[in-house]
Length: 280
Picture (cartoon, rainbow, N blue to C red):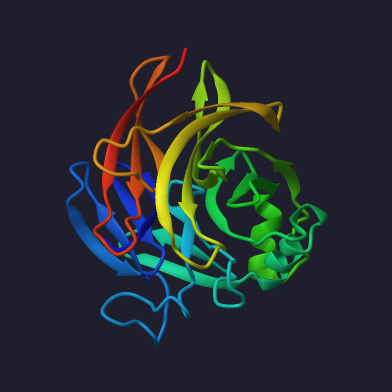
């Protein structure tokens, strides 16, 4: 799988996207490939990838029901990356593509974003709320799923998001940026699990040297995102990892959770990692 950027769990398998791929990849628990299905129509596909200048840059995905997932482009280049895909999983996979340029333009023009780039890297779902995680200017944009999907399907007004700004750890003076997220419950309370990575690059468009990645949790209190969070660096046994996404695979106990992470190795084969997280 090229440039893996997002993963979700469906029944006993997983679906994975890549930031320069028009396909969704279905894999089993052993990470063996079961099928490859297009979810984006592009005349500019070259050898199963889309050139950087044209790609929708799929970076964020999450299940919104047992049979539906949302996939978001990063918005880091407009209009090519101002796209959202609704994917329906059944006997065959169906998809609908939506232009969300107006919504992304609103995010770019928020006071909190002035002087920064939009670069959506993760999506998490909690009840009826969608949470988009922006990289660089580490902001979580939260809004109603129902209002958003009506905007996509019926052209109603887009939802006005709430925002929460975070400061993440640094390596060599460079701040980590959100790269993946999902939700889970710890002691019956909802939390985000998120990943963040550091890449020595001047902007959201170019790639750069990977310095490392982190994993953390943020509590959701009465529907509001907490200010505090727990975070630790992911060990780099061979070389610094660029972790792009995280999903819960299995709840082992009240304090232990098995996770699956995907990495983007920028041109090399993507890696899928099994991790056990312990919270006390």
